[in-house]
Image (cartoon, rainbow, N blue to C red):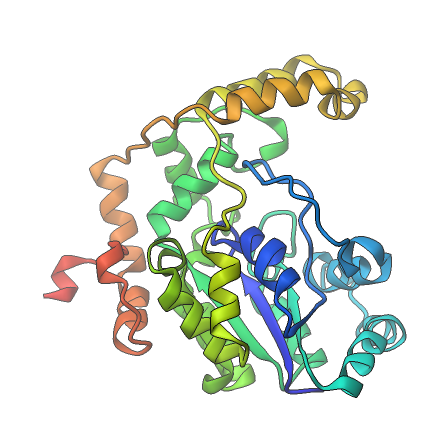
Length: 335
């Protein structure tokens, strides 16, 4: 299908909400068919916005659900392509008449293993079967920082977050290191995901960008991302320069979440979560400072060894400036 289609596949915890609510939704040269997040654990802005197509159209929501959540035994390509042609393609065809906008799809569950199909290769194949000429955007983040951010959102036993069993950070990381069924560390082996997408779409169609550049060098990030997408870099920078969504939450807030999960019956929990009392408590607790998270030397060394080869690929083959952001590297291999 059209080469003017761009798909942002993630990563989660790498500014997806900021891009979806600001850049993709507001840029004048983009037709926004992205997910539009309306709830995060972290702190979001509450600015008024023009309602997105994602919020209005249950068919677009279903389209994403098919690709990101269905197990292989459930997934039916013919059903998904029918859904696409009847309900999604008309947006794109209407845009083609004016020929002024690129079409952007975005959903971090394309690369997430949480509340999504755990095989990221399968999801990549589904995307390729629908959009073989698309450009792919992948935004990555220092793996240790990513783990800290994820832990702050869900500091519970990672084998089943829904049980809300508290666990300290070092034990939490050890759990996902040794339990291969969790798949959390494998999704952070960025080189494997990038190479897989390159094999499907071609090297020139896969753009990889650093989350840290968005945080610390917005103009550089805006220029590089806009050049890849084929949109105005000045407009991108003006949209992103003050944008920041899904900010991390405090340790007190997570303790409060644990308390609710354990002591409020599930029948009433959803209603309570939407109450003004709960929203006021959460607003107060979210803003407090973060507890420092520390890893033992043992697990820190294991993670450095695990990610080192892949991160060298990012540095040597993709020329990404991961050194200045302290991405894990095995110093023996670097030397």
